[in-house]
Image 1 (cartoon, rainbow, N blue to C red):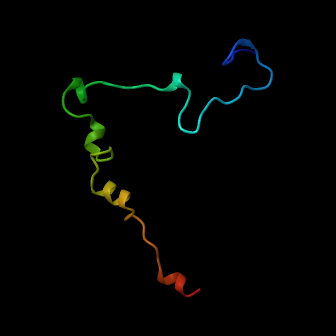
Image 2: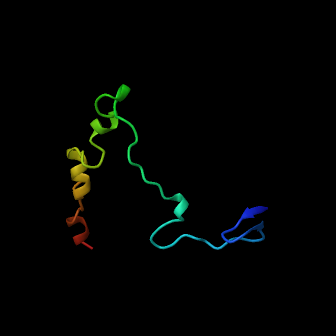
Image 3: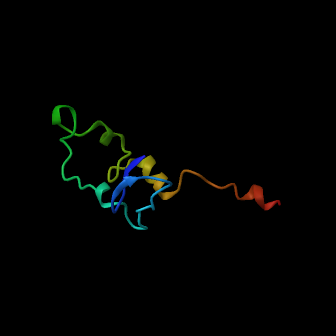
Length: 82
């Protein structure tokens, strides 16, 4: 298998060392998005997903409860008998 290695090009026998670091990925995979597109149909209004309440900084009451950990409860008393 012909493979472009980090230092040279050549045939690959086995594997190449992983070039991922603890705090990032290879530089060619990092991107910066400055502007995607205007939202809504034909660029007017908000995107439909923003109206759902499931996007960051647009949380509805359900999502606020989810983030706060209020959707589940523990029985408490049922395990006290053990």
